[in-house]
Image (cartoon, rainbow, N blue to C red; front, side, top):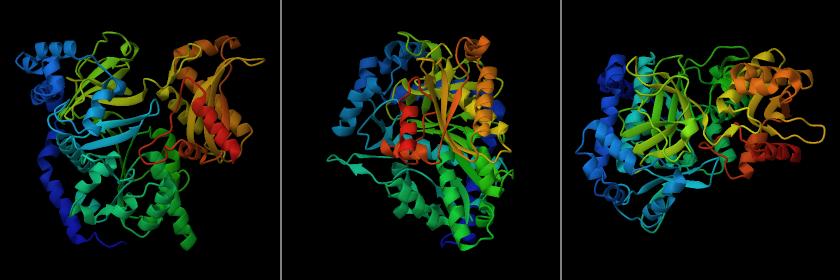
Length: 538
């Protein structure tokens, strides 16, 4: 066991749980959030408009006048003065703030910290992270532990071991004005101070590493003998680490069967960023053996560089509770209207089940009606309970070459169902992406899935493809229509590639690391063909 955690860090955990007791009680009061979400959110908006009234954007949009109105009139005036916009609409102002350190452009003062993110639909983006946003992110992070305690995880036990965070590089670039730019994890890591620094893994040295394969290797060797009790990271990269830790443990002791033998006190897996379902069988296999039990407790989070959006608040329920009181105001634009000149927008108590919405954020870092690109659906809507949502895709990530109207959730659902169909065939499935098959000589239009594959191919791949196709037909009526009668789209085809092909492809694009994820689908073949080419080159 690594040095650091002891009885007194367990006492720190108990103290944190005691400190959070009021928050735990408030989070457990579903009625409070059901009845007050709209009031809380309009209060957040009023505070943001008031704070930024003297900025360049605030003066141009008349924020000072907005806050003198009633809630309904304030919201109406704000929407009329500020249309929704994505990063490209804000790029010039962001550049002035970050590169020139101009104060008071979209937020008071100079924003000294910027999160760099490489979206799959565009180039580099630089997201402001103000002091107020830092505090909001810290409060949201505390809610992770509050909900863990609600799930029955004693924080005294959790903090008696080590907490492992699989973030990106913590190295930062500092320009001539002292403005810092890097991964969000790099901006947040300096906030980890004593006594939490005594339980934090992998430590600052490894956290600073930029080369991701080397970082995973160093991390695996560092935590192999540590008493890891919590891991936080994307399921895809966490699984890579878990497998490497298990390999190292077996090299030293052939009797090691699973990760539970290495980390017997492991209690909590905090994950987000990608849908967990496709990774669930492999995590179970690594943790407790093939067909074995799940990790003791899992908690899903919905963080973004723009703000910490939601967190799982009910054990076993995929719905994520919207953070309505963390300094961010949310609107939800119907997916089909996102490119309209004047799209409608709804608050969290106005949305409807079954409708897909694009998330729009107004933040305490100076983003105003900012379109982050995620598409969500709601499971619970106030006043019946707290606003709970699920991420179902990206509004620029879809497949609709022939009217099939597929989104990320459809592809992920198809893969999960197909995995069940080959569960007894000794097959392991990894990353995947889908793209259209364009018609040609002797080739009908269709859908192709490239998927990492380990195990027997031939009939197993054919069974996987058939189950994948059937599952999507059952879920998406447009795809079913295009597949019916055998005269439209051909059955979906599956191209199996070796494990690791996707990560090699991402590395070739400079997008390998803890903050990057594989695109699940696209309305073009660039991603899929790139993966196939990378696999063929090995």
